[in-house]
Amino acid sequence: MNETVTLSPSNVTLPESVKANAAAGVVFGEEARQNWKSFTAQSKISDRGMGLKFVAPTVVDGVSIAKLEKAEVDTMNEIWMNAVIVYVVGQNPTLTALKSFIMANWNLGNEPQMFKHEEGYFVVKMGSREASFNFHNEVLKVIPIWIKLPNLPLNCWSEDSLSRIGSLIGVPLYADECTSKALRVSFARILVEMDVTREVKKMVKIADPNGQTIVQPVLYDWLPAYCKKCNAWDIIVRLR
Image (cartoon, rainbow, N blue to C red; front, side):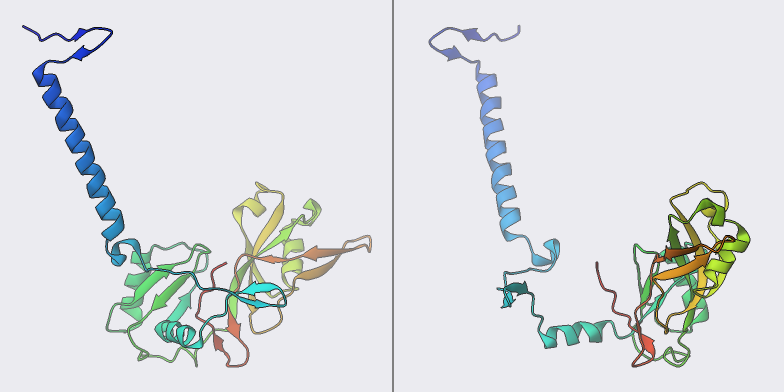
């Protein structure tokens, strides 16, 4: 026979089994809350990441500035000193595929740490500075870079016109599919080999057959940080 619950305006009478279940639920709920409170208050720093703290900003001319400590920056520079930037043209390899290629061709001995940046390049962090070749001596100065030509008139989107425009910046290689097929008309996008040690052009001038001149903005998908003074790549990846 099923147990019944009798309700009245002044009180509520519950069967013993219902009371027991209710009590267990209260105990369980309180235990869960205490466990969660204990976990959030006492969990290890390694579980949550590094611990941070408030440091009062330095105020210069009324502007708050985060003044970094030289020792801290030098320490991080040393950590990333053994890293190089890898940019794969025309492909989007996985970390596993690129790591396999590096291990097969770079003769590093130890497997490097690898990180993929959202802008399409990789940071390869090696265990030491010893390698079978000298990165500083063999550093590339001419590399392919994707550029965008926003609001470029559609009558300038031919192969010949894009080649002429790209030649103002470097050696044009090819246009992407959306540009070639006019699937996107807000900007043309082309791959150009350019010398990153020279000044980067932000504007170029285009003369149409009628003699009118167009000042065309140039945007870059990504530019590597190159130090002209030391003639080497700056491998510190700056977050935007």
